[in-house]
Image (tube, rainbow, N blue to C red; front, side, top):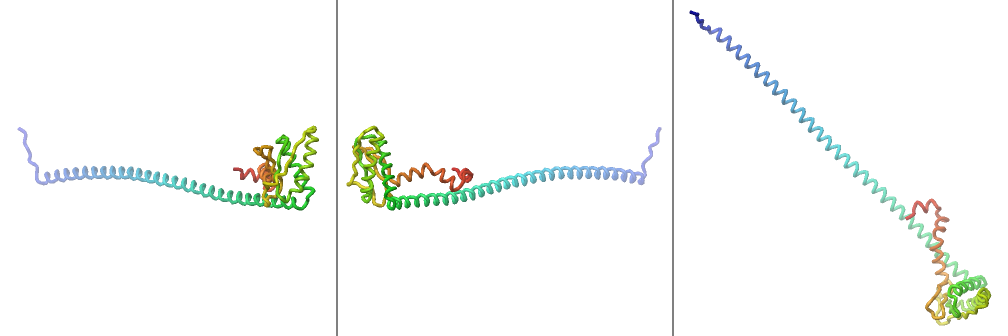
Length: 232
């Protein structure tokens, strides 16, 4: 028969201390494990937040940088257009002034050199005769040009007959309807019915010259490269 020995109080206390120490150690290990896990999760979340915020900042910076670049381009383009318009406006003023001065000089020439003016009138009338190719035409002019136009008419009539192999043409100087006295000169030629007309006044010829010769005038004044630079 085995003998059961009862544990003494000291032995019980010792066992309790062991059990308490074990439980405490387990608790410490568990607490340390939880702490490490919490630190790891905190680091992961912190990294995520840092990356997310960094990406947000980068995106915002890129957006603002792009907006700033576009704003700069718009400003440069606006300034360039304003400068271009100022240059074009100044050039147009110069060209307008040039043709205005030319118109005044045409009027002066018509009044100063009668022989040269009559030659010009003859050629203007001849041009109308060839274009209309009719038996009768009328010519309008300034009242003060009556004498010069009649002389030019007679010369033009003979030259026309000669060049057209004897074809006659009647040229009537219209004394009822006149060109304005403020006109620079020239003539207005109409066919027999008055339905077809040729405007050979100096003002009209200058307008044609302004249209046809403008590219050459611009090149002469401003240069080919500048014209290409500011071409519309």
